[in-house]
Length: 286
Image (cartoon, rainbow, N blue to C red; front, top):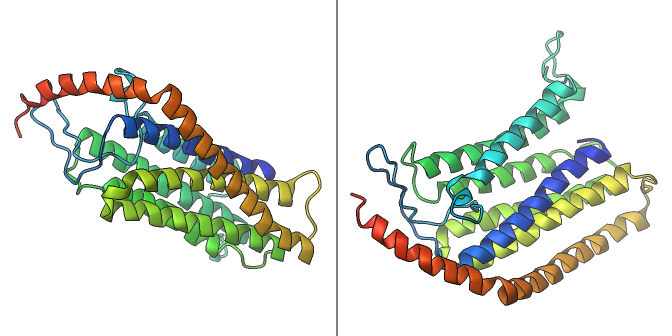
């Protein structure tokens, strides 16, 4: 991650996840899919699933694609590729050297690999709950994704030893956003009545996290890296405020546009799907 590309790649992934989550939240709102506590059930070999709470991930639109847990699959694949890139592509998989001591140059890569592993675990839990492989408690997927963000912030918090002041300020702002995001995922477990609000706020924060990764890349590894001066350090919180302002403004505009042009379509389609779903669930033995 100690390069422009190393920060731009996760930044792009978080930006994509934010857009996907924002759209998914608005579609879920118009489909009246309220999160409820419960378990995923299966009956016989048909694995008929009764989703009694909205999963932490969002299905693709359409009758065919909605049956495929694409987001969890991509989450697992991206995490797997991330671990391979951090440990094997750069040949930094060895944590302990031949002298029995930790290899200092590889510790950072192992830290990033641990982050990827937790997000991959989140994808695995999503798949397990979707297919009913293990009867996990309800909202486990929210707890695991919260832990994934918490670990990300935790590792960044202890990642700052020996860094310049400008690098420390950049990463402090980053892990504050990450910790708040983790807290909102966990809050959704206990305050499901605020699911819509929490989901939209999380989407904005994930977008800010993605754009801030780009800010870090530009400041530290851009064509003209910023000098470690007090005035440059002081500008960073102002820059973050504008990141947040831009995404909040875009979110309001996006909600208005979606409600104007797409809201009625998904509400109408959902009414038809509910009629079919009600007939099917009557035949599923609990």
